[in-house]
Amino acid sequence: MKRRFMKNNKGYSLVEMIICIAIIAILSSVALVTVSMINSAKAKDAAVNFNSVVSETISKAKGQMCVVNGVEEPTYKRCLHLYLEDSSGRYYLRIGYYNPDGASDADKYIFVDSENKNEGKGNNLTSKVSIQYKDLDGNKSTIDSDGVYIIFNKNGTCYEGAGLFEFYKRNGNLVDEVSIKTNGSHQLY
Image 1 (spheres, one colour):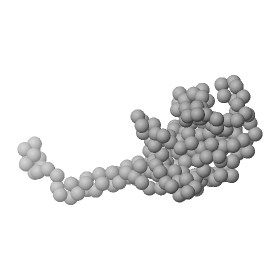
Image 2: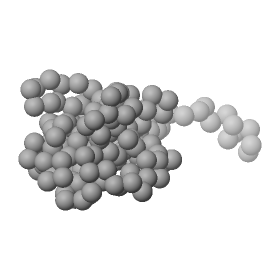
Image 3: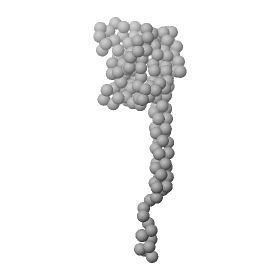
Image 4: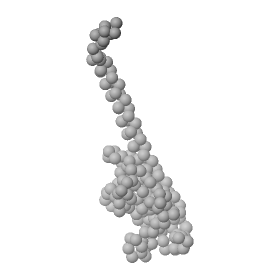
């Protein structure tokens, strides 16, 4: 009996092979759609996180004295620094202070590590996104390691960095936009 079974078994039929390939194709397409949805959600989350940090910074800027390391600084303004960390490919958003009397960038922009997450790097937006900035003159650039500084006055108006921030998935599809106007209003689209 064992010989008869082995003799009649000649392997998979063509129909069985096609069914297996169809099942694998369906499972693969479901996995690709899921990964794409996750990347879209992470890019959307980065825009929402960015918008909430802008709100937080504006509320801290309005009518409050800037206190840097325990010292009141009446001429300082609140600022944000959105930048790309080269080593990890992640975007970070730091909250800090702007000194208009500083001689160099190192003197103008002050970031206190203890006031920012991730050992002073700031809020981690994600590595699954590409962010572009369009200033009020229409000049568009991709955010890099130099980043963009967004500065708010004590009345909540945007002193520098107003414009449109576009959040793209790594494949180039636009996911979300955040607009910051000179009057300090901002909107997530």
